[in-house]
Length: 190
View 1 (cartoon, rainbow, N blue to C red):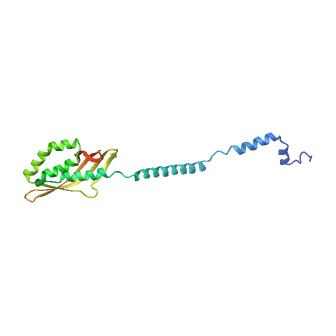
View 2: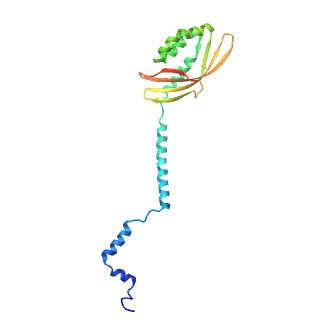
View 3: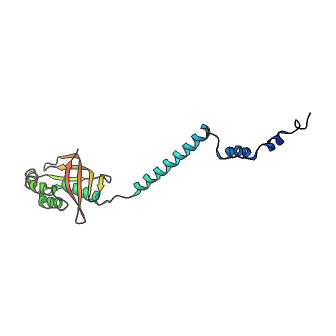
């Protein structure tokens, strides 16, 4: 065996030009291997999961912001006033309805007052409204307007002692006028 044959692999590598060695080792260091599916899928799932958690947190936080309960309280009271009428005190009862009303509902109700009074007194009716604790729900609220749904049970008593209970549902549109919530629309929906 000759001396050149006895050179080991390391010695042969040492004989290579320096530039060639550096370029090969540099290419191995700076270019990572192709990503494997086993690595990409879990990383992508973690990123998606974090995105969902952040989105859920933002939605939860915004949901915590409380709505103004003023429209809901006024809508409950106006439904109570509207459906609670007594032939003995018809004028005072209707005045309570108008106290929480704004146009166009106020103008409409004012125009029908005589008919309401006539119907109550001619039949000697007493209407009493009952609202459960959770009878009103804000359907929409933005700025100075709100829509509220209200459930009302109305008991009508006649002079002969008969009673009839009717379940009513109303949608009231309220407007904030001079710092006060007033009912601008009052519509029975069921």
